[in-house]
Length: 263
Image (tube, helix red, strand yellow):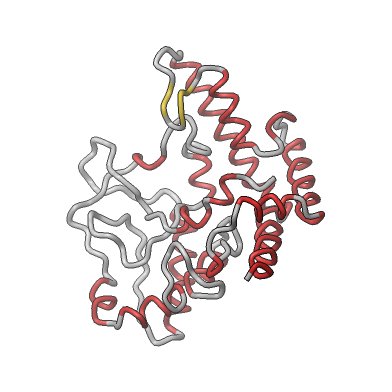
């Protein structure tokens, strides 16, 4: 069955490089996933240049002013800094720089809004709902982000469409390949169908958390650290298995066909 993480992919795609305050260090933070961020920004620059827009790649975290182009945190960085976010919320790991100014702000302000957004995301679109083959989508795919299509202009599938997609033979086979990959990575059978949901249930049942990113008040510190380490190991293994099995691409294709059929 498609992971809940998959259905939130578009939301993650709209996340900024650094999402919120939370540390005591007053200085600007460096973005941990620099290599993937470079690939995303360079691909975006090349695509926009072909449409006559000069875009300056941004590799430092944004400040209190929203960035012109929101970018997702790299998948591998995300998985290795808290896994699925069950034990610890990754959003508070860095400090925003209040003096930061996006170098592309003036270009965006001078451009017609419709032209700027159309070049980035597609006509009338946004970081949350962007067209396939738009510059934003191309840059995400060229930088190796997890979900290949993110369903673009089709919006969010209904629960019935998600269930129908999960029952399609090609999705079942992709899930089997994913589960086999997880088995080879040493992930126990109870976690192989939907690792995030299964791990959440396990942590709740064991009294480690009371909800996502909120530890139980009486949990032992060593136990909490062991759970955090285990979550990251599972999330990193799942990331690799979803890629090698083509799971997300297969689910996206199945959902897209169902949504197009529904009109």
